Length: 275
Ligand SMILES: NC(=O)c1ccc[n+]([C@@H]2O[C@H](COP(=O)([O-])OP(=O)(O)OC[C@H]3O[C@@H](n4cnc5c(N)ncnc54)[C@H](OP(=O)(O)O)[C@@H]3O)[C@@H](O)[C@H]2O)c1
Image (cartoon, rainbow, N blue to C red):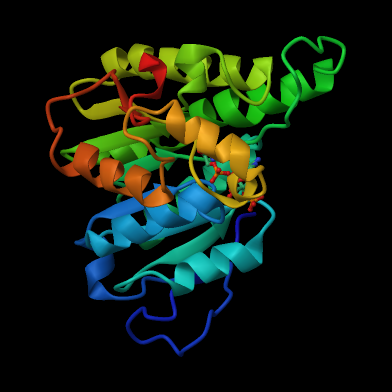
């Protein structure tokens, strides 16, 4: 059962995060203001996507899997009202169905679904024995199957809206085959393929796009040697590593301004594949 913790800034709510598994309608705006759900809103990029959506006047549903503290910190950082955190694993379709029922019950709508949850493990591409079957399955289950399962669970709600959109957070690795391991690259290529298939299948009611970042300066990147980071900057035409805010700005641009685009892949990579 996903938990739902309403925003401390929701009208009529006490300060602090009130935990409830039986949410009721919180304020009159909940059914009129647009609603966005970000899977993995507890993560580095996901939390920034949530902040950009809240600043763009969306009510944000911050999904998390294991890290409630980070999800709560994301929630606390959001501007505006009507935001919640929800716990659900994208690998568990029962969780996802319950999360969709919760969103329907409380908000009655979903305008934006951002499939951001992801996982990986660094394994050199020539270490074929190192990429064990179990890791391949886990990576594909979260990064590809999880995104598909979310779309399946939320399709009925998205169909209720007039300008609904699904944004799949992919990766430059899908295109270049360079990334943390072979299965990770393949999982993002599968995601991009799904974007094309569903861009066609769910049109005209729901747009489906991939947002495809290059390497983003986050917790993992910050642990990399300075020489490696410099090398990556040198190989990037725009001469820097992406910040999570670059991905957030692109997300809002895609949702609000690229309104005649579907089934396509938006790169946010500073031109890295050109070199
Ligand atoms: N960082 C980069 O350089 C980069 C570049 C290109 C693309 N991307 C993509 O951007 C997305 C976010 O990456 P990030 O760097 O922000 O990673 P991150 O900080 O490790 O965050 C990953 C997020 O995924 C969630 N997650 C993992 N397994 C899940 C599951 N079974 N169900 C629901 N949520 C689950 C985590 O939730 P909990 O922590 O709550 O478990 C966490 O919020 C990923 O899809 C990644 O592939 C990242």
